[in-house]
Image 1 (tube, rainbow, N blue to C red):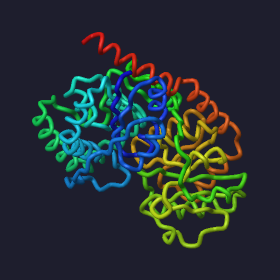
Image 2 (cartoon, rainbow, N blue to C red; image 1 turned 180 degrees about the vertical axis):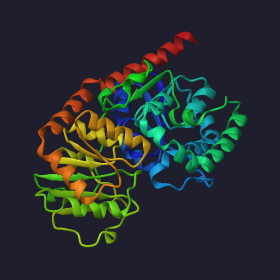
Image 3 (cartoon, one colour; image 1 turned 90 degrees about the vertical axis):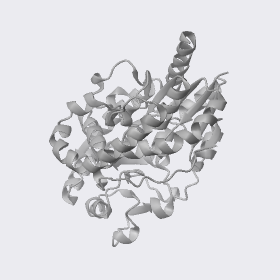
Image 4 (tube, one colour; image 1 turned 45 degrees about the horizontal axis):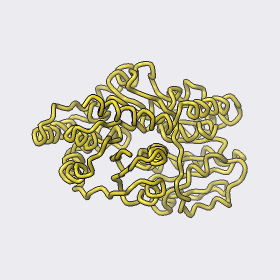
Length: 408
C-alpha cells in the first residue's frame, strides 16, 4: 500500500474533480491524505481519504488589478503569496507522512514546491483547460487584448515579482515565470476533460492526459434547494463560485428568458442579491449562493434543456455529461477560450458578456429549437465516459510513482 498526499485550492470544482481519483486509489488499497478546507471534510472522508485541514493564512494585501472580468491576471501573486504562507506550515507535517507520491492542482504552487523539496514524485490535476504559452499565443483573443491586459496587470505583475523573488530565495528554488505559476506542470498532468472540450488540444504533448469527467458524489447534498418545485422543461443559469457577472447580467436574464414556456432556475453569484433584481417573474426560481448556499447543480442539470453558463470547464463537462446544450457567456480569457470550443464543437452558442436581452433570448431560442446542439453535447459527454476517467487517472498516477521508485 502506498501513501498519497493531495493538495488543492479550495474551489469546489477543483476539489470535486479529484473525488473519483481519491475513491479509485482508496479502492486499490492506497492511503490517501487530503489537505483541504473544512467544508470538504465530510465528502473526503466518505470517499475513504484521511482529511487534514489546511492551515490558516493571512489574506494577500498586495497590488491587484481590481478587474472582475480579468481575475486570472491577479492569480500569480495571490497563489505565490498562498505558497509563502503554507509551505512552511505544511512541509514538515507532509515530510513526516513519508508520502510515496503527491497529487496537486495546476494552481497549487505550494504543492509543486513541497513535492520538489521532499523529492516526491507528483502529478498535476488540471480542472481548468490545460494552459501554457502555446495556448495563449494561438488565441486571437490574447493578441487582441494583450495591450489592455498589460496595462491592467502592471501593478499586479510587480507584486508577483516581489513575492516570487522572496519565495525562491527562501527555498533555493529556480526563477518561476508568471505562466509557470498558473500551470505547475509535472511529468504527468491529468486533465479532467476530453480532448473535445480542450481548446487547442493539438498543442499539448504526451505529458497531458485527457481522462474525461470524473463525477463522484460521495454524500447526499445538504442543500435546501426546492427540487420538488422543478418542472419538466428547465433552463438553468449558473456561473459558479468564482466568475461573477454582476447584477445587471441577471436582470438581463430575467428580461430575456421570461415567457419562453420554460421554468428558469437562476443561481445568483455572490455580488448579487434578490433585492437587486426587482420583480421576479413566476416562471423563475432564483437562488442566492450568498444567502441560500450551494445549489445542487449535478441534480438540476440532468433535468435541464439548456444551461446558460460562463464557459467554465467544470460546467461544460457537467453539461455535456448530461447531454445539455449551452449558451456560454465568457467573463475571462480562460472562459472565452472554452466558450469558443463549445461553439466550435456545436454543443452551444458563445455570446459576449455585453449581450443584450434580445440577443440572449435569440441565442436561447436557437439552441432550444435545434436538436443538433443537444446531440453534440451528448457526443462530448460520451467522449468524457470513453476517456478513461478515474480508472485511467489512477493507473497513470501509480505508474508514475513506480517509475520514480525504480529510478531512485
